[in-house]
Every structure is written in structure tokens, then in C-alpha cells.
Amino acid sequence: LVKMAFIVSMIGYWLPKGIEYACAVVVMGISIGEVACFLFSFWGYIQAKNKGKQREKATITGVTSKIGKIIIPLSITAYIRSALRLAEDVLILAGLKTFSGNDSAATGVYGMLKGMVMPLLVFPLSLLSSFVITLTPEISRMNAAGNSKRLESTISRILSYTFIAGILIVVVFMTFPTQLGVAIYKDAAVGDMLRQLSFLCPFMCVEMVVVDILNGMGQQVASMRYALADSVVRIAMIYFLIPINGVKGFMAMMVVSNIMTSVFNLVRLIRVTKIKFRFNEWVIKPVLAAAASSQIVAAVMNYGLLDAFSPRFALVMGIAIVCAVYILMLLSVGSVRLRDFTWIVNRLRTSSKTPKAAPESAV
Image (cartoon, rainbow, N blue to C red; front, top):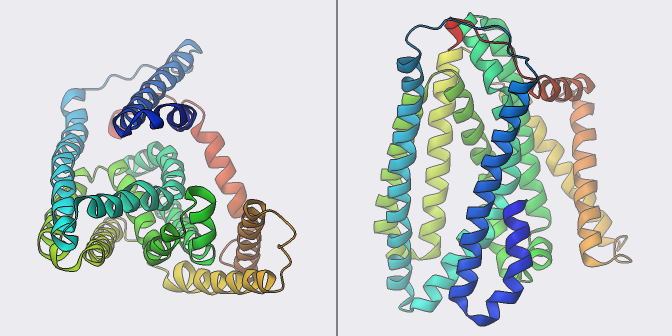
């Protein structure tokens, strides 16, 4: 919120001065957002400490090595992936330039994909990932305590919600691609790309959520291997496909990358936890509910029932109808129950409280 508020409020003033000033505003916004995030987290830590909720002091032996086993794989993955993503950006631009023969065209297409389409896809996914992160300490404690039944139940619930949310995002983007592109960016071309890439959302959801769960279970090394393998595959596909196929090559790379990493991480999670993949409950029923909600909204729009409103308000109303019908359909087929909403609320309340000091086995 801080980052976007700064950029939106400043970009109109600085953009007329030149593109370099606009880029500087974006970089400043990102930096200010990171500083605000740190200060907010640090304030939360001080508040929890001052309230004296952690009164129990645990004597933990070998804490440095235990923390190192968590930090080192995550850090190595982050550093290497950052370097490889930099290489990806350079190769993508070079490949698009080779394909189109024009620098400005290559930069424009890539900017639309990375700066306009991908943020729309990732934003709702980041909200879901944030919810899972709040559950990571609880997952870690259950795993350390050997409470396998409760662990499997919790992870199954999370995966169910993940597939349901991912499929809902797909149906929203598939139903309103042009409206979203015009409403947010005033560009219908963004909607075309959004529609073509929207089906990746469930895979992106699964990858983000499952990686968070695996990290909470001490599976950082496995996640690191999959992430590095994914980067190698991405770079190879970028190098060979984009100069020949242009944007289609980029989209093919996105498809292969997201499907590969989501499947690898999900298989690893299933193998570690022994949970069952409930294809009917997690995929078939949500897809049928999504199709029904999409058709109902299409009928509403075809009859012009939203024409009396402004385009943006009609878009909001349409999305609200999709979500409402989708949830009602899931309730009717038993994929979602009212107690599931209670469970989510309770988890959020529990996660907002500072836990007691963890026993040695949980670290």
C-alpha cells in the first residue's frame, strides 16, 4: 500500500519530465515500501515483546546450526534466483529484439507482460500466500510434535482453499479480461494477454502455497533444488524459443515453468505428508462451479442488466456476482462448508497472537 500510494501520487508529476524520472519514482516507491515493511514488522516485534507474552524461556542447544539449516538454503535460493532472473530479463529483451527487429517494440511488449499483466496475475495470489505464511509456525509446530493427523488435516484444508481460490481467479480473469485491462490500464491489449495467461493462476497458487508449507516443514533444500532447476529450464527456453517465436515463446516458457514447479513441489509435499490428492473435491467441483458462475454473469451482461452503471462499477458488480455464485455453488456441492469460513477466521485470530516459546524440538 505504501509503495503503490507513493508511486501513484508522484508519477503524474515526474513522468512529463522524462522516462528516467518516472523510473526513479518507481525505484523510490519500492525502496520506501520496503522500509515501511521493515518498520512495521519491527514495531510489531517490539509490541509483542513489551506485552510480555513470551514469559517462558526455552533453553535451546545448537540453535545457530538449526537456524542455519533454514536460512542458508533459503538465502542461496534467493541469491541465485535473483542473478538468474537478471539473466532472464536480458535474454528476453534480446530475444524479443531479434524476433521483432525493433528495440522499442521489444521493450514495449516485455513491459506490458512484466509490468502490467503479471502484477494483475500475482496480486491475488500474494494475498493467499500471505494467509498461508501466517499458518507456517503452526504447521512447523505440528510437524515437530509428530502430530501427523492434525498436520495432514490442516494441509489438506489449505490445499483445498488454494485450488478453489486459484480457479476463482481464473474465472474472473477469463470473464472480464478486456474490462480489467481497460479499467486499470486503459489498454484492451492487456486483457488479451491476461486471458491467455490466466489459466496459470491455479498452478502459480499451488507453487506459492506449497513452497511456504514445505519451508515450514524444513524442506528448504528440496524447494531450492526445484527452484534452481526451474531457473535453468526457463533460461534454456528463453534462449531457444523467444528469438524464433517472440511473445508466444515467452508464454510457452511461463506455462512450462509454472506447471513444472507446482507439480514437483506438490508431489514432494504429498510424499512427505502422505496426504491424498482429492481431485474431485479440489479440481472437478470448483471447475464446474466456476463454469456455472461464468455463464450466469455472461447472461446478466448479455441482457444488459449492468449497462445502467459506469464501466468500473459494472466491473465490480460483475466480479462480485461471480464470487457469490461461485461460493454458493461450492456450498451446494459440499466442496465448501460454513465451518470452513469459521476455521479461516479462527486461524487468522490465532496467528495474530504471539505464540508461547516453542519447545526445543520445534526449532
